[in-house]
Structures are given as C-alpha cells and as structure tokens.
Image: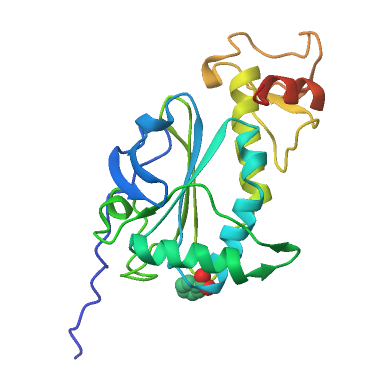
Amino acid sequence: MDTQTTEAPTTNAMPRIGDPAPAFTAETTQGEINFPDDYAGKWVILFSHPADFTPVCTSEFMTFSAMEKEFNAYNTELVGLSVDGLYSHIAWLRTIKEKMVFKDMKDIEVTFPLIEDISMNVATKYGMIMPGEDTTKAVRAVFVIDPAGIIRTIIYYPLSLGRNFDELLRVVKALQTADAFEVATPADWRPGDKVIVPPPGSCGVAKDRMDGSQEGVECVDWFFCTKEISEEQVESAIRAS
Ligand code: BEZ
C-alpha cells in the first residue's frame, strides 16, 4: 500500500482586510520608503508582480503607469514590488521606456516606486508568495490601503492572469464613496449608479429599521434599500482637489 502523504505547502501568515498594513522599510527605484508611514493621509495600492522582464508584467506596468494620474486624482499612490533586485528593476523599466509598445501605449516612464525584495521579507509579510503557484515568485497581489494605513481590499491573481486596472480604479472609488456617504455599493457599481443604504445595525450607520420612509431612500424589502447619489456628488466628494 502506498503510504505516501501529500504535505500541504508552507504558507505564510497573510494580513487581512481591516488589519493595519504591515510596516517595512525598503529600497525602491525612487529611493528608500518607510511603509506605510510615508503614505499617511493617502490611499495606496501596494501590488506585487512575479518578475521583471516578463510579458504580462510588462503589459501591467505600462497600463498602471499610463493610468497613474487618474489614481492620483483620487488621492491614491501606486507602489510595486517583486522579488527582483534594484538593478534588474532599473534595467526593465528603462527597456519599457525605450522599446515597449502595448495597445496604444509607448514611451511609458514608470515613475512610481518599485520595491526590490530579493530577501522576500516584504513579500512574505504580505503573503505574496503562494508556494502552490510558485515558490520563488510573488503572485499578482493587490492591497488597497486607506489614509489611516488600514488594509481595505485584497485581490490576488495567479501568474498567468493580467489584472484589470479599470476594476482597481473602481475599487478605490467605491471604497472612498462608501466612506464619504456611509453607504455600500452594489454589484458592478460605478459612480452615478444607486448605492445601498446599509440595513439596520450594519456598518454602524442605520440604527432604525428601514422602511423606505427616509427621504430619497427606496426599499424593496427592509434589508434592501437604495438611494441616488449622482456622479457629480460622488466626484466632488472623492476627487482630490
Ligand atoms: C508574465 O508576466 O508574463 C509571467 C510571469 C511569470 C509567470 C508567467 C508569466
């Protein structure tokens, strides 16, 4: 009889939504950063990619970089990481600027910091190494961290799957809208769509039983109430001045 057992791969402790972002100091392509303290008062997307000089990662960096100003307009900074070294990062980003063309993007200069993490210290702290996928590369992790340094959203993708950056911008806008208006956002929400008025007792907001009598609130049932917030109201509340 075959008595061999399959051992579960070693897993790292992973931070969770609602936890303070684990602190670290690291060297980046833009100098040393002290995370998350250097970003106090700002939203941050901390994301990892598997390796420099790989095609999916290249397409992602070009896309993220082309959208950076849009993220900045929502008080959001980008910080990348892979377990490569600084010289590899610099050479790859130079190649992207000098040679790479993807969709209608070319001559893309990546100006947000890219963390070097040869020791895997940061990747391990953030649970970015998933041994079942790859023991020597970070998966495509995304941590959305709020101005108080709290992790608000975590998304993981495998090595083969490039991220959807419109979705990441939607996540930022939805989190900021939820905070600004004390609401929740339904499936596929975009600014201008109706928002959810949280049911009684949830989110620490609505204390009374919902019956639709509150001005502007429509209830299908006590647990499913919505209201209109126009795109202009959303934008003026969340767009950085
Ligand atoms: C890529 O970015 O193309 C890639 C990186 C690691 C494994 C597979 C694909």
